[in-house]
Image 1 (cartoon, rainbow, N blue to C red):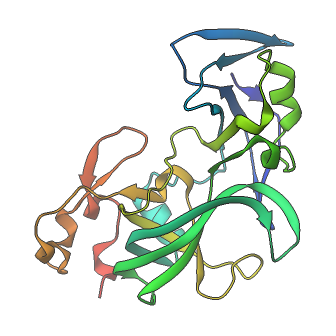
Image 2 (image 1 turned 30 degrees about the vertical axis):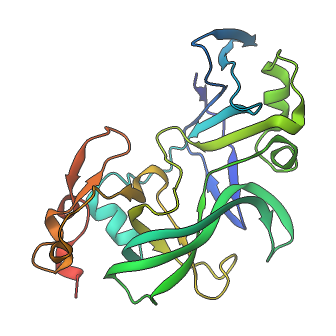
Image 3 (image 1 turned 90 degrees about the horizontal axis):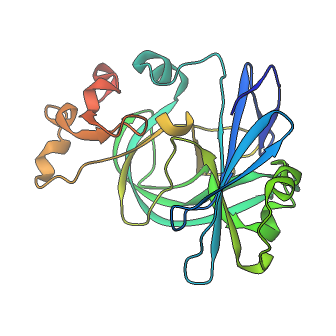
Length: 249
């Protein structure tokens, strides 16, 4: 479903991502492979119904067309001020911007250990935040992510206390504690606190690392052979395919 020529904004702190061409939103739930269809005007929205441990997860996926193609190596390397391999130590979800005192689109935040810095200068441990999170329906409804749409298309009666909304780009992933990722980051004066970095570029800015058996692979000579996951295709590619190796110290 594409809503053509429908300019909307995803609000993340005080950073606005303007959708230049189209917005694709899918609300749904994974369960029992049963699809319920609900029509809203001329657009068809797919809703999948299911529950897990008395918790129902609604998927609120979107796609942004921003005039920048972060799947291109040079584009994402130019955009990022910091590139690093990090291991996630902690994470939590929120849609409250403490600096600007307002509700925003759901985001994930936490701490991470820097395994290897590939661009810029970073401390051994950082705070991070990135767009996208699983958040309770009762918190999500307070934000600016079009909750009326979900109410309109959802015909299933749920106890809202048990409903979780999975809000993210359609090809993006959620971080997991203990996993190691290649991340592309910036710092924004508007919404980053001290030692906090924003992971950018949506599904292209966070790439899971394939498990390695030898620590020596993190040397400058061998680091390009590390395998990172392309979240769009699902393929494993060389780190050197997405990072400018000449910038690594």
